[in-house]
Image (cartoon, rainbow, N blue to C red; front, side, top):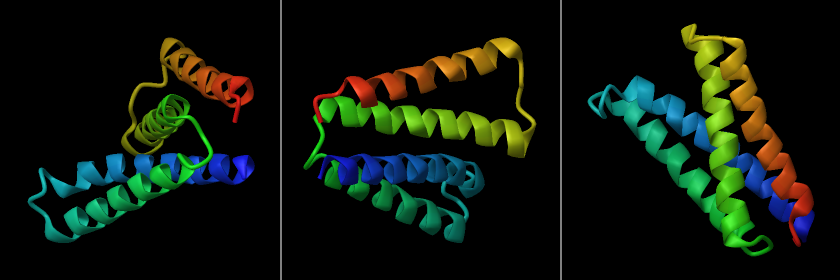
Length: 109
């Protein structure tokens, strides 16, 4: 059950990255189809997060969900939009990943 919750949470975090990227393309929710797609991905992300809570503590799940979304969004920004790849920025991403991994292996669930 716990592994299923972690897998569900992982996909919820990936969808969080997706809707964060989608926001870029909605242009303030003025473009209909990007807005519809972004809202659908948001709903999917929150749904999967809620499902993962059946086997994980709220604080751990929320921190991991936002961490995966943050890391994914930063990486997507680097790849898709040419954002900074500075060593310091990459080290900060590594810190977030370390926190996610730490929560996974230090969690009771």
